[in-house]
Length: 570
Ligand code: C2O
Ligand code: CU
Ligand code: CU
Image (tube, rainbow, N blue to C red):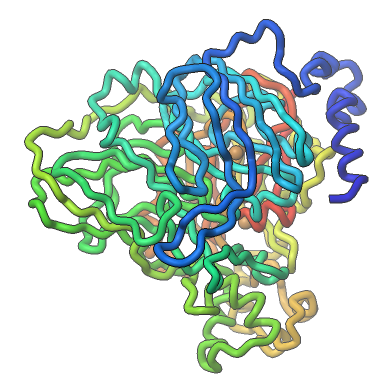
């Protein structure tokens, strides 16, 4: 991190949000008092927590040495005893359990030897408490968050959001789960306590000394990190002992780039009661559920009627089409020649999970086993109706015919949004949104070429030019954008949104068939998986808070490569 960057950050924080004050003098000066990071007098928290990010050693693999990780250690200073639920011997931070309406203060201490900041993914909080990269603190500094829990009941996610270090810090362990409960949820007879469990999905690669191995080099970053070891709640080969009744499992995809297709191996369908940070209006049952990085799905897993001794295995089922044509081409090319080393093997190969017996994006693998170990006679019944749901429609927006764009593009080594890379002190004209408005937003792929050309181009890929290992060279002979067209989980900070339409396109039909039944678009969302060629329309309210709110790809390697922008709410 250069001194320049730090200076710029400080400038942004101290000059009443840099750009804003420059572009609209006087408008944001009210924010000035907030930028110094100390507790606010007169803010009386119901919950007070100290969180320290520190290096630690935890046992992850069953045998051999412990693994060095980065970890959130937390202490409850004030608040209900169940606010923090520590996971013993784990790199994951404690589960933080909130109630709607609580006022929260968090002291964040950075005891790493590098900058860091925490983001509360899914929570609707003021800019200053959202983990915007301008608030990244240096080693041994402290940051104070203050907010009120405004969210409805649901599952959220906290993780490092350090400028250009997010992917690596999350990979090293800086992540945890948040739950919020409210009065409406409490009235429902949902599984509680020991029957309400986390299912945090992550993938990692270990070296032969049990240490985490991250990817190096650009090629791996373009596809995103894919590990060969699947961890559930921070452990490999997880088996749950369950009673013959219904459970709530809060699945959270905390992986850097792996997309899971959750399903039972025997074809039993899966039932969801919530997505991202909210309960659904009514449960949805699907043959499988797609879960991209940053997404959550609350699963209703009912083991009623299963006999003691039965075992169910949850899988990530196979699918295709999420990776760019160029990577799958290379995968084929490589397998015929074996796993040779070289530039491609070490870079792209690792990203694809091709090296060291890795797992490709879309491969089938077991996630966790559920062993029925006890028969019980009573179980909550799946409610027909869950919560009151205010469905947003075009009548709620002021730009029905002029949606704000989020255009996805991939130039060699440069995944971008709206044709730009992230820059902390810039917003485009249409990224300025008045507070209190509700906007229609269209997320689509824009690789700078017309649809009809796609098919032709696919056939013309010249893999010969890849041999030199320079992807940059390819740009010359073909459209590099389409070559890199892949699935991107698009996340917007701030309030949850609703998906109003999803139009496929640009993907082969047989490939789309392998994923299309797994999207649950009926609930509140903050992250949506956009498949190649897809166009998705969402409606998002921008209420309550002014300031900078990020939107980005939650493939964390892409985020760090600059596939991130921000709205400026004024
Ligand atoms: Cu979960 Cu801006 O991220
Ligand atoms: Cu977020
Ligand atoms: Cu992406």
